[in-house]
Image (cartoon, rainbow, N blue to C red; front, side, top):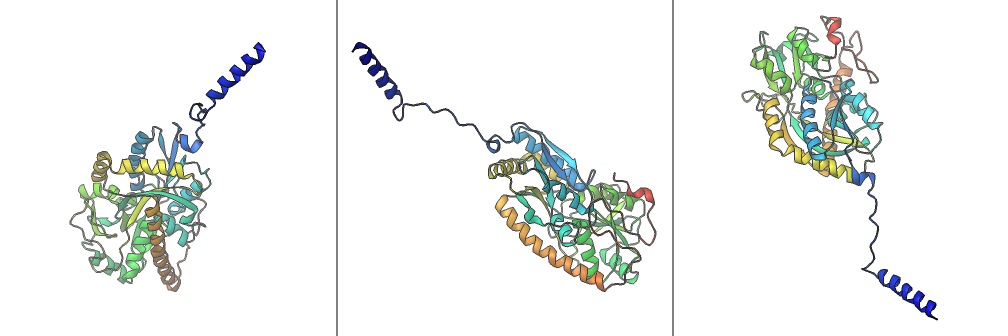
Length: 363
């Protein structure tokens, strides 16, 4: 009887410990998404190579995000085909947040030009970061002092004006071709990557370039370039006295947005952490100061608003590209075709005065 009583007492003690509110539950293990990034390196894929304006801004963003996340954010250049190669690379990666793409309007231009099989819906979009304004520039010693003078020359001399851009399907390609076509002028687009368009203008291998302030402004300051127009709608602090093409009477105004996207299916918890890191970076004094120095405008949008904006922008770009295709279809055919689609970085199309072979170097 004594043994039974002891057993009953022990059982009662255990029952008391197990009562609700008194028991201690073992902590649940965190999921990979909850632990993200856990100090692991994150890759940010850029689309146009160094020393492009795109990559300069990406490095500033990556540094800020790394501080917030407590993990390195590494720049990985995947240039070619107006950004299509970088999008294809990113889309094939695991949707876990460790591969980001420094996206822009090029997700739509490359798709609608037939270089990219999928469209913006192939990604989850984390946040918009900046708005930038492409500039149309010529050499300072060129005969064209105004946009009208250059366009009038191009109209009188079809296929004689070569305009460098950041690659076939890039924002600068579509915006510059749309500008001249809206005025009834036919140019030769010259597709480059890695800042080569700027080198081509310096070397006299093109008559003009459409590029961003980060790479144009230093040459304007040195007296080598002259900016004739901005191709977007927002004023640019780099060129406060330069009017947009639209303000000068031409019906083209295409702003460039940049932001972060990830492979479709990335966990919402990971997207939320990335979005928070981007927001904290973009609103920081360091990021704003960098914008003033290398000429970009911080323009944060959270995931939902960013995704909605991309859909609306895609519809606008589709209409512009459709018009470009119609005009090109009805124009006299070129002796050589521009490359159609993109598995490898494209070569520049033949120009009236062929560029030297070494101008294809990426950097």
